[in-house]
Image (cartoon, rainbow, N blue to C red; front, top):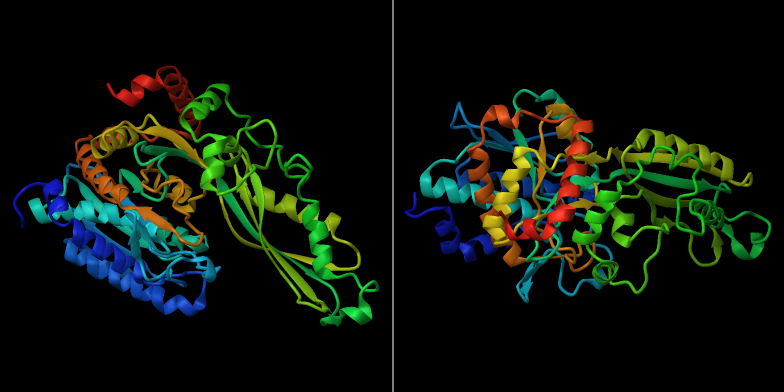
Length: 488
C-alpha cells in the first residue's frame, strides 16, 4: 500500500499505465474473425490477471457459447451502493490493412495519441476505470463503494451471449447503478454525458440467380446478374431526399422535441465539425435536419458491404450487409418485418432473395436527472476542469437496454473518446490526455457515487419519466447553458 491519495498514485505511475495499456491494445482480440478466437481468449486471460494485480476479488473467466466474459468484484460494504462496471475487450477487424500508417496491433504513440485497433473502442476507456480502481485499492486498501466488473469479448458482434448470462445471474449482478465508458466527449476540453443511443438492426441480403457462375461473354444480356439485381433492390431502399423508402418505416418514429433540438444545436457538433471528423467534403441525408440531428434524432439505413463475382463472370450469388440505426419508438423486430416485406415486393422474378438477421438492439433514452448522472457531472468537472454537456449518440450499445430492462438500474454513459478517434476505421487512435483526465474523472465518480444513499439511487424512473425529465433538463440547459458550463 502506497502513501498519498489515488491521484498521487496515478501521477507516480503514468508511464506504467501507458505501457500496460499498450500491452492490452497489442492483443488482436477481433471477435468477428474465427482465426482470432485464440487471441480473444488470450486477451481475457491477460485482463483477468491484470484485475488480480489491481487487487480485485473473485476474478473469473466465464466461458460462453462464444467468447469468454471476465468478472471481478470488491464488496467491502453492507451500507454503501454497488456499482456495476461494464466494458468490452474485443475489437473490430482491421481491414483495409493497407490504409494503416502503422501495424494495427503494434501500438505506437504519435503526437500524444496512442494508435492501434481498440485504442479508443473500448480498451483505453474501460482501462481508465480499471486504473481508477487500482488507484484507490493500492493507496487506501479499499474502494469508496462496492464494485462489480463485467467485461465481455463479443460486443463488436452484437453481444449474442450477454443477455442470457445477465438474466441467469440477475441476483449476483444486482447493483444500484451501471457505468459504461464507451462513448465520446464533445472535445478534449468539453466532456459530455451521453443520455440517448440509437438502436440497431443488422441484416444480410443475399440474391441468388443461376446454379453456378456463368461466363459473361456467353450469358450477359440473357441471364439477370444477381449482383445487378442486388444493386437494383438496394436502390429501392432510399428516396432522392435521403429518407428510407421502406413503407411504414417512419410510422413509429417519435417526433423530435423543439426544445431538445434547440439544445442539441447549441451543444452538439456543427455540420462543419462533423464533416471534418468524417473527412468528407459534403453531407448527405434526410432534409430538414442538421447533420448531428440526422445521426442522433433520426433513423438511418446503411449499406455496409457488397460482395459477389469478379471480372468476366455473372456470379451465381451476391450479398449485401445492411445496418439500421433506430430511434424511439422503433422496435427492431417490427423494422425487420417491414424490411422483409419490402424485399419480397421489390425482388425481380428472375432471381431469389434471402434475408438473414444478425442482431438487433432497442434505442434507449436515459434520465439526465438521476443522482448517478449528477455524480457523473461533478466527476467530469473534477477530472477535466469543466462541466459536461449532455449529448445524444448515433451509435448503439446493446448492453444499455439489457441492463435497464433486466437489472432495472440506471446506466451512466461516461465516455472519454474524441469525435475524431477513427473507431472502427484504419488508424484508430486515443488522446492520452483524455486517458488521464478519464482516470481522474473515474476516481471522482467512485467517490461521489459512494456518498449517495442506496434508497436515492434506487429511484429508477419509468421510460415516460425519463423522457419528461430529459426534455425539461434540455429546456433548462437551453436557457442556462452558459451558466451550466461555468458551474454552480
